[in-house]
Length: 434
Image 1 (cartoon, helix red, strand yellow):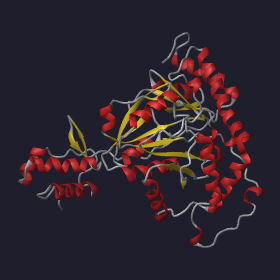
Image 2 (cartoon, helix red, strand yellow; image 1 turned 135 degrees about the horizontal axis):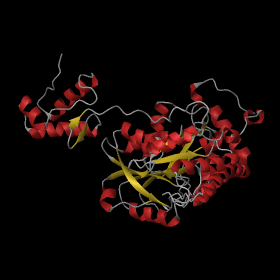
Image 3 (cartoon, helix red, strand yellow; image 1 turned 90 degrees about the vertical axis):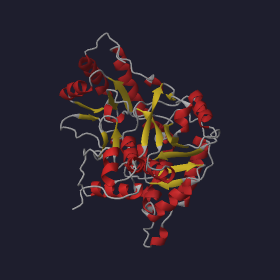
Image 4 (tube, helix red, strand yellow; image 1 turned 135 degrees about the vertical axis):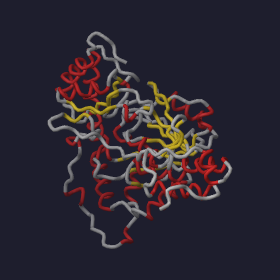
């Protein structure tokens, strides 16, 4: 049984090491030989070993730490919310409010006949036309829409199509929970973007020059609720001008947003806009929209047709009819319910002199982000009071201690008691918390 690497070129040495790791002869945590030691063992130039290790690092097969050297990394698990103990009010999972989801009635299915042949695949012309009108009206773009299974599906397909393993992707910090796990799985390097009340700050030119893609959340940033200011949006337009960077806009709150979308007209670089139906139709409706000027969009759709092939025509039919039946009034009622509970909780926290960063009163969405001095203590103290909140460190590249509170399962009557319990847990009456 081969337990040592073999080969004389960087390519076959890398293949040999990959095989050892794949067969678990070198398990997670195993420390690889130093470059010099392996070069002496195989009788090759150290530069050959360095090139092999670089290939393996770029593919995410090994990792390198200055002190530890090169080693086999632990496997990255997919993002999952924490298991909630029974009896706690769920403010952690990030799910939408079930009570705000529309009911399906016979009128929504009327006129639909079940398909019997594989030739019935493709996007519904009626739904595409409706979405194209919505994009023109609300996002001021006439780009052709493409349908996929969800926002994460769009991001994954775009990054896979556009970025080589080892490429750098700029993401907001803190970020949407699945983003870090996705980038790790794709063997891409996540580069954090610091946030303020206007959105992600523009990084140094050298950072932009080395990036392959950037992901920005236009409105209702998860988890802070930040909506980009027009000024910051224009700064990003200027920063990305004539740079070979793919910009992915995540506008998951788009249909529910009451904040302005600042448009894509002035972006001269490659971009993809995405939004989803899940926030107002629920997660059963696995339909998301991508549009943009990027030449990879048709390729993304081609790959989609070679795998999932198509989104259920029945699902598309229902989505169109329910979205139309909700109209702007129905969507506004859903948005106001979230906004009302968010305002009540923020006001109750402010009464305890607990001031959150990013001016959250100007934000929107389902979440509130609260930095805390001791994350584990706060989570345990709130659990003792009957509240389950999400740990912030796993969704922050800078590992800043914080909690994320989702208002979806919070009643209006619960807002004041929750704020009282947070204040007690922080031990902060009369003291501002940042």
